[in-house]
Image 1 (cartoon, helix red, strand yellow):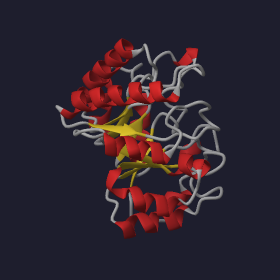
Image 2 (cartoon, one colour; image 1 turned 180 degrees about the vertical axis):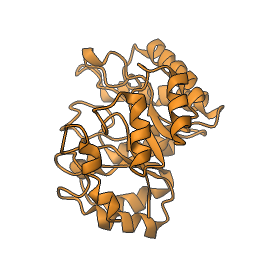
Image 3 (cartoon, one colour; image 1 turned 90 degrees about the vertical axis):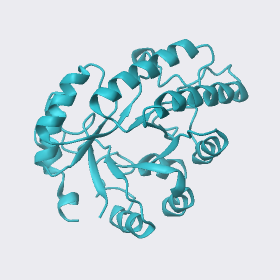
Image 4 (tube, one colour; image 1 turned 45 degrees about the vertical axis):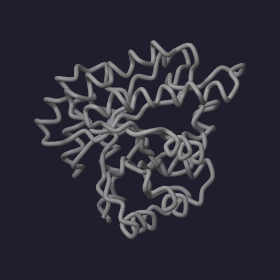
Length: 261
């Protein structure tokens, strides 16, 4: 059976971020992942992980000015210094909380930026991030995001992510295979997962189309989990979904899918 990590940015929203780690542990999760932890001191998050006897398996690098529409910086020409500063900050945080993987978001380039220019910027920046994190044994993750949730996002195709990973020198980035996003992008999930398995170092799940629990919607996750086992995937599966029951206790009440496995 796959190993599941609770995404504490979306699950247990009734709790403060650090308290979500303990809530996830009480529900049987052995690990957690987080999108943007930076409002919490790294030392505080590390203490919460230690108190809960949990581990952090994935975090995101800073995405820039989120309120201003930035969704990452890597593919934005002219933002190189800001990007390098974000990588430095992410590394400092990851080292304190012992995060083995950092997702580096590509961003939404302006409409007047040619694709070739954004691609060249993205590859240079990702190579820089890989060099910085690689010296400390931390993997850089690339995740294709669907255009419905993230219009204009640069890394919107699985094939593009795979090509970039293959093209960049070592230390290479890894593929973050999010079944929710990739079902919306194109489907044919198991065939594509098997095809790209050698590049995959983290998996995420959510029901499609509503991004609720994985026992709702159009993806048969019971079949997906069996296929992950059959294909020999031994990494973590991040539960990056929004509980259908949004009130207190909603996350725990919605974990029937996990208890039935």
